[in-house]
Length: 135
Image (cartoon, rainbow, N blue to C red):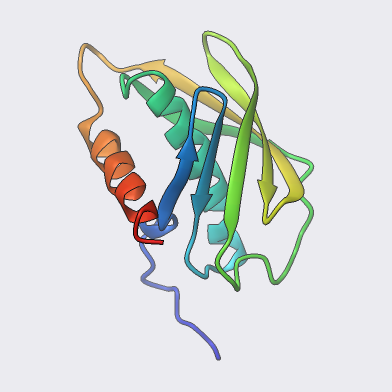
């Protein structure tokens, strides 16, 4: 079955946040094409870093390392686990596993938001946490 993702909204790459603490986050996705599976991995890390900083930072993808091409990645829903390896004043490094298999390392950078809370991502985080209770 071919799915048309031409109008897919990347903000819909995550279905739920299943777990989150100071060092780790676990998320679930819907079925996705491989390029959006990578987007979901990056969003998982960014969501964790934003939460860790009270949603007072803007997070962005800096790099991805050790990612192997998997043509069927995302054809089934994924469980993504991002474990923080290290953090500096400028960002954080994550070891990412997908469905319990080592997948890649992701580096997320961040900048302080000018005296404001990032309510968009805070609301999205809250919504995704609530979705996990429906799983």
